[in-house]
Image (cartoon, rainbow, N blue to C red; front, side):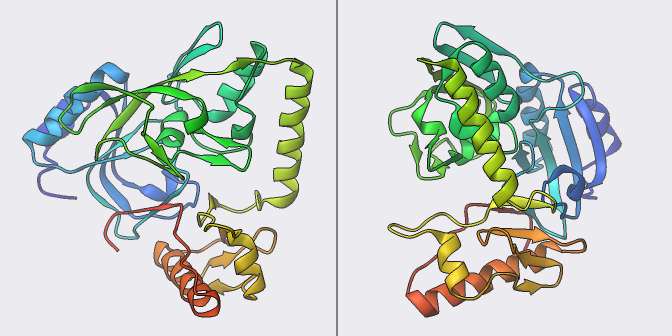
Length: 306
């Protein structure tokens, strides 16, 4: 642990959330890899976040923000400083407020719950989210989506704390690009406002979601730890097809393997390290660039020292 993580710092932080000291990040990520973080804190509520940020600034400890832990590869060396985990844990599941087709949703709410409650209110526009792991906050940061849509299609405003602990509400004008948001560096998303629509036929929406979930179960490697889709789709191409056509289906480095079921997934077959995953991603990139002169850009984030 970093020397700045003194007993006094830990005691002060403990007022504002549940702490994990020297905790392996593998327990907080869907890839199940990652070394120890100095401190992981799960804030008691959104109102405690500026206090956590202030303590980090005063002690010169870096802050890393994660959500549900999908779309992440955390270094085997872990993460120095404070990891703020904005996720669905304990009794703090976050709130969803419905006002006609306007919906205000807490960042810690899971995408699964948001889809279920929106459909329960007779709304449509969230179908693309079905089966995508993680929480709303992470979905906003990554502009998560599928070929059916993305967060940028429904978000009207995002409320976040800046790295200085200032509460900021940003309007969705040019806030998003493909699988990316333009929020300030180090922003901690706490809430999103969405504009949905009333479903013409609510049963059709339910059936669409059921079909999406069925298809994901059949085509995605849900039996192994992964981070979801690894690469963004380059213009005019599908990453999975490029990887498949390059003969990389099932290719592995250490415990990291290109999924036999869906080639834009890398799975942890049991003993993968973060470096196994990183090296496999780099090998795929090099192979596709050499064969097709196309650069595959990762959709997942690398956190920590590599």
